[in-house]
Amino acid sequence: MEKPDISKSIAPIFEKLEKLSKAKRFLLFSGIIVVIVAVFVYFVLYPKLQQYRKLRTEYSELDKKLIAAKNAAKELPKLKEEFNKAEIQLKEVMKALPESKEIPSLLESISLSGQEAGLEFILFQPGNERNQSFYAEIPVSIQISGKYHNVAVFFDKVARLPRIVNIKDILMKVDPSKKNNDLITTCTAVTYKFLDIKEQPQIAEKKGAPKKNTETKPGKHA
Image (cartoon, rainbow, N blue to C red; front, top):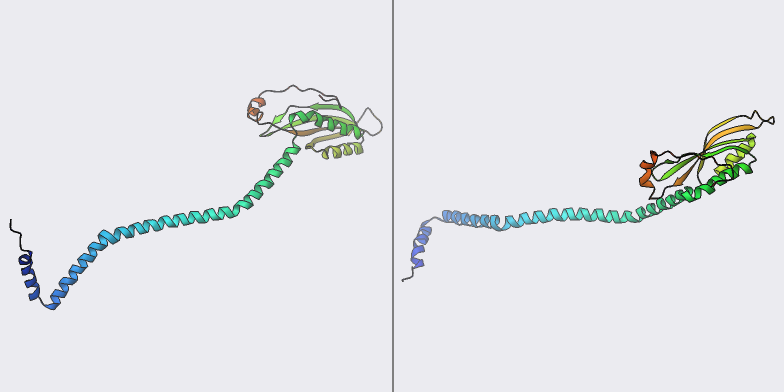
């Protein structure tokens, strides 16, 4: 099979180009160059540009995350210090909340404070526990007989106990059975105890179960 002569095929094209004026030839070549550049831009350069924009956006997001991480790292020592302070404060609070096994000795201390102040106990009766989130309130109904100064000394001694004890609902009246200006003082001493983790989920159940009050003689607590 005879191969086609390419030179013969394109010869007419060159002849036509030679007949064109310089201006037309310039415009023709310029158009060809524009087409080639357009094809290159659309099929080669534009996809690269899109990929570049995508990578630039990802880089910007990663840079923001890096800056945020660096700022968080700078705050870490401060946050750690605040956490340590909060942990110390929590331990101090926990020291002020006795555990269940320490409640009898705490009640004994309250009673002993009254005896040391020279007061006579008429009533010393722990009430039902009122459970909160992680602690329980233990109210103690107290009725004592003695002079005003002695009562003030008793309240001061209770306030100085290492455990939290709040005195409230104070009512004073003259003791009619005595003629030496003694007062009968009625009040409620509220102390608190720390609830173990095992006790905390049972709060809702315990609220519906009333406890039986037991009157305790001063200075003899179980």
